[in-house]
Image (cartoon, rainbow, N blue to C red; front, side):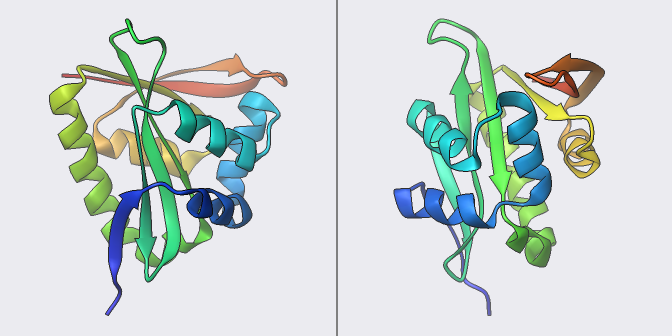
Length: 153
């Protein structure tokens, strides 16, 4: 039986995910920032209101958290990067991601982020979670098309 855990993110989690990150996540990180997954993960976790790692038998499935635009802003930014291991745990991932979004909606009235328009799976997942998907807009150094996702309580 698989042992699933959600733990506060550690440096070891960040290092593992930087090596095992899904290609689509790596492409999205590069498109928006021209930075490596390691740099983006370290910065995201350092600035996060909260950051957690989903594990299956000790292997990192995903690192996720919440950020803000500024401390005075009412916009909260949910984010997640996943490993290739996620494909072996789809049902558990979907169930727990739905539960997490429902919990954070209780505290944060406006959730906003952007998804690479090429990342069809992430767009479908965000829609399934209840996000409104906006039109594609050119963002990042290469002006790749990204969709704004938004959820209001």
